[in-house]
Length: 106
Image (cartoon, rainbow, N blue to C red; front, top):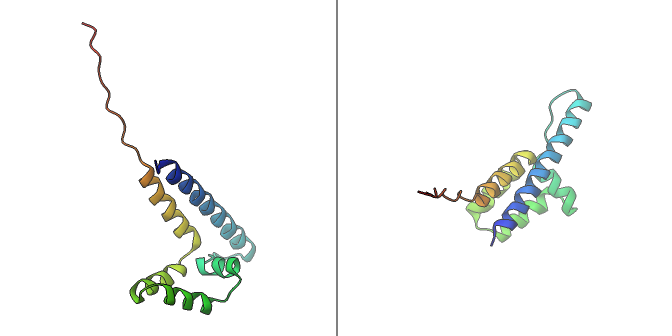
C-alpha cells in the first residue's frame, strides 16, 4: 500500500540529487575550484530566513540531542542528503521476488 508512495519519494529525491549535483558542478566550473552547496543554504533561501532563526527553530521543536544532530546534518552537502534519502526510499520500496513455481507436466 505504501510502495507507490515510497517509489514516488525515491524518484523525487533522486531528481533532487541530480539537480543539486548539476548546480554544484556548474558553480564549480564557473569558479574554477570545487564548491558544494550545504543544505542550510538551500533551506535559508527556500524559507526566506537566516541560519540563526533556522537553528533556533530546530532547537525549539526537537529534543537537544536530536536538534544538534539535525543542525550538523544541515551543514552537509545537499546532494549527499538527498541521495541518502533516495537510497532509503529505494530500500523501503524493495519487493522480494516471487518464488518460481516449476510446473511439471508429467
